[in-house]
Amino acid sequence: MEERPKLRTIDIVPIQFNGRPHLLLRDPLQLTDKMLVVSAQAGLLLALLDGTRNLREIQVDLMRLTGELVMSDQIEGLIRQLDECLFLENERFKEALAAAIDDYRQSSFRPSSLAGNAYPSDPSSLREMLDNFFEPPKGPGRPSGQKYAKPLKAIVAPHIDLSRGGTTYAWAYKDLAEAPPASLFVILGIAHYPTENLFAATTKDFATPLGRAETDVGFIEALNERCEFNLLADEFVHRYEHSVELQVIWLQHLFGEVRIVPIVCAGFEHLVDVGESPMSLPQVQGFIKALRSTLDEWGEPVTVIASVDLSHVGLRFGDRYPITPSILRWLESEDRLFLEKVASGDEEGMFSLIRSDHNSRRVDAYPALYVMLKALGEISGEIRHYDQSIEGRNESVVTFGAVVFP
Image 1 (cartoon, helix red, strand yellow):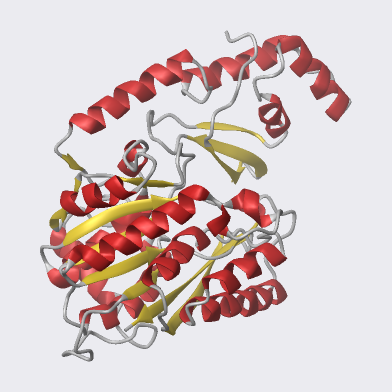
Image 2 (cartoon, helix red, strand yellow):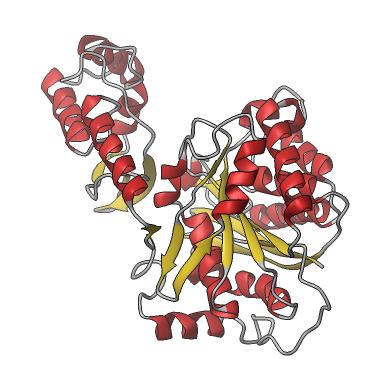
């Protein structure tokens, strides 16, 4: 057992088990399919596993926090279970991660991580599912004819699972389908796992039930040459990242064979409290300059897709209150103001809204949106749709929207 055990970055989801609050622990990198359910009280122990305390110090701090003595064998038992699930940052985890990274790098393509789970693995069923999201009264209606003379410059679409956000996807993709298809789609997703750099690309093609979307290696190489960091250093995070994959199936459904540039963006959270623009970060400034130059010199029509959700509020995300109608109204007001800044092409105004309340709504969209708006320059768009997905018994809510930029 590690002398000073450290919990690595994992998903911790509040759940109800046998009528009582518990925590579900799972691996976002899917190095293992093992999951662990622990009591809500065990969350205090998890918080103490930061690599600075030995077993005795963990026991003492637990007693200080709870007023109760937790036996050392109970603590050891939970730590042992965490280790078996690869949830501790130790040599066992590092070896498993290195093996997984090597396996991904040697693969000729990125296989679907969501087929058969978040969407059907059968192509016909998947196409039927996507088509149904266009249907009125909630949907925008099926795409019909060409509404635009040129490919769209960009769209904003959710990356929430289709069962909750499918209609909002359809509102974004209807406009895309009613324009001539671009020759290349640059997809800016969100990194849901910590990365070494703020941006990560992959050169792997994306395989889905609808075929294989070709990743344009030439574009990525040209972009990477302009960056002062290795854009492929964190390539492995793409293996199970859903924010790009969910856009790929829509593109394949509407256009058949497509060429893509998959990129995920990490957060700029440390800037929220210091009052600085993301452009104060050398990697952000350099990447945006590199992306803008690569787009300008590409010579073919390109559409940028920002794959983003908005607010994440409620018990699941660490808040201590359930979701009420007044909270939903407040969220919609704040989210729509945010989307208006996006639609007007005001990336600094958008980020100022995030900074003004210290991102209390946990908007995960802003890095991809900031990069998109800054790289494309002066653009303006239209908000097509907004929605909210309430989870459980009003325990939490995730919000999202659709914006198109002709």
